[in-house]
Length: 265
Length: 274
Image (cartoon, rainbow over the protein chains, first blue to last red):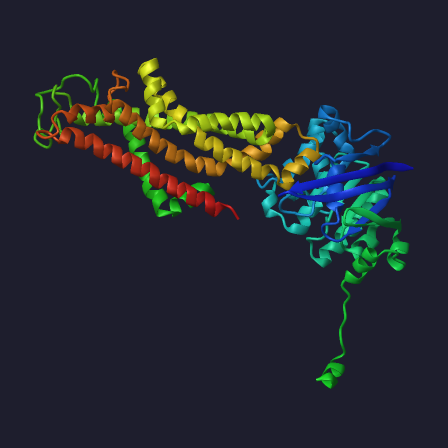
């Protein structure tokens, strides 16, 4: 079933007299409990799409239907209440948290705002959330500054699932993490999806990451959606130049045998 | 506390803190250090300093104890300085936060108001206000704050504008936090440090403005202030310069103390940011 459908979304920014079209007539859908990977080089408009979806910036034109509701016309307290259903995980693990926050306040805020559990049970729920993302209960009292990057991203994921959303938007959520942690986080995300049936919109420039988590992949270039299809099909048989360029950009580990290099020199 | 330790680690902070602590102590203990009304006549007029042990800094034209005046003047100066700075910072924070957070027309309107206050020299504004409304300590405080709030307002607005774009404000919106809560809990505490560093400078300026108002006879006539003491001594500056010099020295020490403290504060705050 379709959870989210975006139709003819457009957005342009004007800065210094120049007019930049960030999104041109983009339409796509996300199915219940499935992952759509949104690929594209930097500047292709994929982050703009994510931010419009989160209602952080307004679009110029287009409609978004989410759970059979016109998502873009919601406002005020109605919008704040409904925000529980779409959550977001940011790329910058440092910038996504108030530097004065503690782990308890980061996870407590969404629980309090949306009254997910009664006040008395909040500490228990925070510990349960930490446990779900693989962090010990002792982290509750820590300041967010005393937590490492990979662990912060786990806390960001815990914050995103705290409100029991049906869609989570990941904006380059693992790009800033080192490779060993990246794999573990992706595993955690796949597990969470299978367990709770949350749909993901996974924005990344890295097709290797997208292949690991996505059911479908859509490729964007210069504000347009140029290709979309099942993940394997897009990666194994890319139709567009932009998709081929992204695949070529995935780093491969190449080790030349030492003897060859001796011969060469 | 780690912050206090950082502050003491800078030499400016240590010296400033010491001077301010001693001044605060003198202000608090004024009734004990020199009991009675400092404005009453205590002895022979124009006694030179260091001649009579009961009047170590001498007496003025009416026979009032200069030492008592300086001790009690500490109260007025610190009180007016701190109260005026507090008022200015509070107004500035409210205006800056509203302007920066709301944006659009509200921002434009508030910033033009700030401009209007900023183009009038603060001292002239205070002078005009006190001469119209009348002189008393609360009015003097308000008059000084009136000229001092535009700077913290501007600084707060700029801070808010930059913090507003950070991801943690976006994530607060994403979890559905109310805008008022975002402004007060996410933005304000992080916008505060540079504004607090500015506050010490405002205290120093306020102390000087108060002294200048008193010097012109626009201070509260019922309280002794350093400015009014300097004004008193001005007429006989050539025969008894000590009457103006001693309160002048007190003023200099206080302002230097506040400035050093503010330097230390700025350094401690900068060191704390990673």
